[in-house]
Each structure stands twice: as C-alpha cells, then as structure tokens.
Length: 508
Image (cartoon, rainbow, N blue to C red; front, side):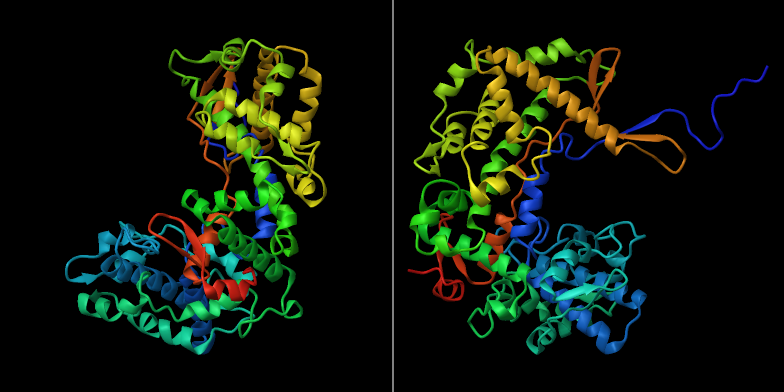
C-alpha cells in the first residue's frame, strides 16, 4: 500500500519567521507622523542626499542615460561619497559620516578607493545589498519634496529643477564615479563633498523647499498641502526650541513635548497658537506613550519565555503570574487615585513624564500605569488632539479600549487587570501572526511571530524590540540644524538662529 504524505507542490511543515510590530499598536503614531512630516522619513539622515539624487536625475536627463547606466552611476556615486566621508570626516563630528562609510572600508586602502569592487552587488563586500542603494530610502521623501522621482529604480528630475550651484557641486563626483579606482589624490580633490565641510551649496535650495519659502518669504498659495504641513512642523519645532531649548539636550521630541504635549502654551503662546496642526502633534506625542508602554510590556513578557528546546517555556498561568505578581495589592481604583494628575485645567499635565522619571522604563508596573493614563486621556482630550490621539479608533489595544477596561475593572484587584492584559496581548499577537501568514513559493506556510504555543506551553524563537516608535522629530531636528535654522551647543541645548527665526516666523 502506498502512503501519501502530501501534494508534490507543497513542502511539509511551517516556517517560523520573525514578525514586525507583533501587537500592531504602532499604526496610529506612524500614520500621524507621515501626515505631519511629509518629505522626511525615519531613515533619511542628510539633506545632501536629496541634492545628490536631484543632481543624478538632472544628469540622467541631460545625457539620456538608460536605466542600467543610471544605476551603475548611482551606486558608484554613493560609494565615492562614502569614501570621501571616510577620508575627510571626523567620526565623532557633526553631521556624522555619510551612509556606508563602514562598508566601503573593505574597498579603501592606503592608496586608493576601489569603486567598482564596492559598487558591484555580486562582490564580496558590496556597500549596499539593495539594487538602488540608498536611493530606495530617499525615493519616497524626494518624491514628496519633488526634487527627484523614480524612473526604473533610479532618480529622474522632479518638479523642482536642480539648480546650477547643486549640479556644479556634484559634477566632480559624477566624473570621478566613472573610474574603477580612485587614488588618494583624487579623493582629496573631492573634499568639498565631505559631510562636515562648512560650505554646503545645496543648503540654500533645500532650505527653501523644506520651509516652503521663496526668496525668504512664505506664500501659502505657492505651495501644496504637504509643503504647508512640513513647514508647520518646522515652525512648531523652531518655536519649541525658542521656548524650551534646554530640553533639546534630552532629544528633539522631549523639547517638542514641553511646548505642545503638556501645558497651556498651545493657546497662550502667540506663535504656537497660530501654527497649523500643533494640536495634532499633541495627540501624536501623547499617544506614543501608550504605544511605547505596550511595546515594552510585550517585549518583557517575551523575555520571560524560554526557547523551544529549553526548559523555560511557560504555561498561560505562568505568563499571567509574570505580570500579576508585581501589581500592588490594591484595587484598580486605588491605583488610579495614586497616579499623577493628567490634566491641569483644560490642558494635559505631564503625568507620563513624571511616571517615567520615577521608575525604570522596563518596569511592568510603570507601563501598566502609562496605559491607564492613556485610557484616562481618551476621555479628556478634545478636538484635533483627541482625533490624532485615538487614530482610527478601530485599532486593538487602543486608549478607548483601555478606558473601557478601567470602567470594567475599577473595583477589582490590580492583579485581575494584569491577567486580562496578558490574555489580550497573547490573543492580539496570535491574530496579527495569523493575518500575516502566507505560503511561500513551495507552498510551505510562513508564520511571522516570535512567540508560539504548543500543548498549552508558550515558547519563543527570539526576543522582541522595545524601543520607542520614532515620530520623525529627531530627523526634523537634525535637518533643521543642517539647514541652519537651529544651532546646538556642545551641551546639547538648542537655540533658534536669526535666519531660522526669520524664515519660520517664530520669533517674538
């Protein structure tokens, strides 16, 4: 008798892959940031690269290069720019060194940069495994900014024509990129392209585009909605620096929170109250506290689980106890009464900031308290701040859902709430994993999850990340520096430059 194990086109078993965003709580912050900071992404770092791709697009159009030639030139230019930065820039200086400076070291010796070797994708040490190199990271933002658009995975001219001073800046780079090997002397000649040089001819053009200004003034009729929202973000950040520049030492997002997330300045400050979407930033920054709390709670739960072949797999009861045991022996209502005030009059008080300052960010109790604060805020915020804070309102584990749990568990022990949170995280992680499950080319199912259940026991294939989701304010602050809008002192504090005050119209 012949046994049949399965169809010939299907491989047996399930392939376990690491999933991204396992609880899917990040979307409201990611969507809001994309709307409020168009033209800047979480992976864009340098104004100079926008200009580079604009120059490449203009060169391609002028010389009628086909896709293959354009791709070859792009990859070589990125290699040479990295080589120049490695030779001329200080690793500890600012702006930091160009993309791929670590990768090109394999192709850079005491005598020369081996451009062709580093640029080839099939070599031993390619500078980038992506076919279009770093253009793939700048493609979307460049398209939004209209400096370059995609044409067969390489740049072509955007709506804003590349100016003569920018094409002149990169002309030596384009010529040098044609050589398979660049000796040290030719790299020295390219020193003006290093990231840290004081003279950057592209900045004037880029500054006008990022701030939606022409000849030093802003006319809203000349710019599209994305341009105006981007300008509003730079104005908000510039005013935050003017009011709370000392907080920039702790990060651009901290500085922005001081100005717009907490307190009355969005109404009392004559500049902030006139900036579009400033209350949208309030909602985004406050929601990110809840998102971060969920991510840290889930990552900590996963860390408590052992691997499949170990002895530290966990039962559901053990996972429930992991979060329930650290909870105070009080009711949820009593715990709520001990939380810092969430409102000061009609404006948010810095409850989240106080809680984080008083505890370890990975402390499970701290993160439960942050979720409770978020649940409270769902009933306290109004207008644009509330709309952005809540997002689509259909996201699982959102603040409205947490607000309903507060009502349901108010007079029950905190341990009961902890059990419910564990159950809901596990259930949500399973829903997300099932939604992502797909067959591969051989018919074998791929499950994107690090946590799996077998026979009532949970095991993991890896740990989860617990970093905060970026709001793009870090990138916006770095760009503001590169554009000469703000300046940062050695101690990290920031100040608005006279030029920034004038262009952004945020000075007193």
